[in-house]
Amino acid sequence: MEKLSERDKKHLWHPLTQHKTAALPKGIVKAKGALLWDEDGNTYIDGISSWYTAMYGHCNEHIVSAMSEQMKQLDFVMFSGFTHEPAVRVSEELMKILPSNQAKIFFNDNGSTAVEAAIKMTLQYHYNNGDKRDTIIAFEEGFHGDTFGAMSASGLSVYNGPFEDFLMKVERIPTPNKQNTEQVLDQLGAILANNKCAAFIFEPLVQGAAGMKFHSASGLDTLIQKCQGAGTLCIADEIMTGFGKTGRNFASDYLENKPDIICLSKALTAGMFPLSITSCSQKVFDAFYSEEMAKGFFHAHTFSAHPLGCTAVLAGLELLSSDKIVKRRAYIARKHEEFVLKIKDNPKVKDARCMGVVLAIDVETEMDRYGKLRDRLYKHFMDKGVNLRPLGNTIYTIPPYVIEDSQLQQIYDSIEGAIEIA
Ligand SMILES: *Cc1c(COP(=O)(O)O)cnc(C)c1O
Image 1: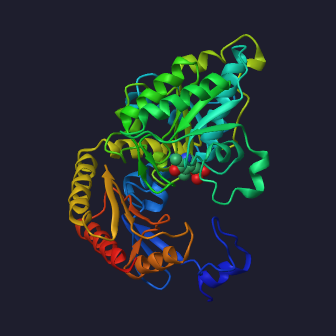
Image 2: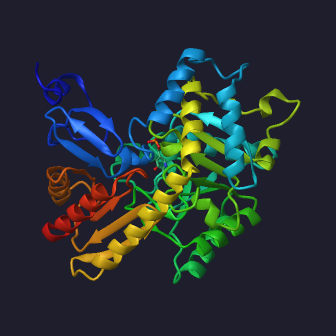
Image 3: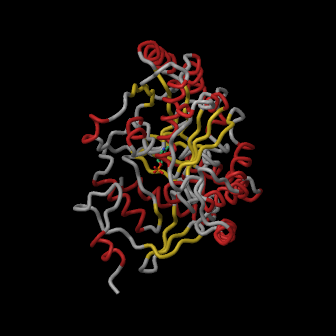
């Protein structure tokens, strides 16, 4: 039989790929815990938990068995006119850990559509209140997904050229740090005064796709306060940061001023199922609650609240708060801190930082986001048996919480090797 990577070439079109120059993809035949197996029998440590989803490890038995039971009981039913136990329980369980102002759960089927729904909610919220608004505020270099609303809010316009004329109206501000917060606040004040701002959307504390860039919680807090003071709804895109990655359950837990809307996906279902959630406060929901049909939120995705996805969420939440995982999360965070101390003075390291299980190192080299050095580093990691995918000059890892000590060490060793060849 021809290899997967060869058969793939015939009819498949991969995301984020220029097929003319890309290397053939590796055929993966099995995954367990932190490990991936390719068709040649090589193993790779999944150092980014497959886009930050599989945080409890691949093929986690607790989640697999819950889902297979659910599959026999109720596979799927449309979520308009019907409801079911897994969805109701997800809403009950999430309310226990989401910021206390969150009151309602709206289901979608992936990260971009969670953002899309959030943006539409904010536009209709103002419309329903007789205060039509047309502008979204977002951070420079933010990433919120690839559908049109989400793409508009994303400041990382790597290859957005063909679509630029069709995007929504967005005003951008830099992320706040200790030095610039006053200046960003002034900039935000001017934007709020000169536009009808429906929403401010942000990745709280960590901008993932930008290269795991961190910003200040107190700075973000003042921006949220200013927006909310102007009636502009705040959307926290926690699709990357959610479910323990920053050390707390949600990055919003570090904020005093709570977002009106929160987007969740990725680790939400532990990588087992495409599903997402847009949660919101009672105030947002109330703007849609009316005798008038047209004031309702007419937005749906076929697979909304899929029972299998909801079951994965519930099993994942049990693990998230389990003794074992809580301890591992703290352990990884500590190990990351030690590693940062070890390498931060290396002359080839421009910056090393960590927060929770997120570890990022900027190397002292200028390069294109998808350039040759990235390919070289990516190959280095693969050769070392580690799946890490540098973003620009940033090497980062978000390992599964269940990663073993020796595997974590293997990641650190491979990063040190990469710094040397960068
Ligand atoms: C991945 C991601 C998205 C998009 O989610 P998809 O499921 O890929 O559409 C949006 N926002 C953030 C912060 C993400 O990390």
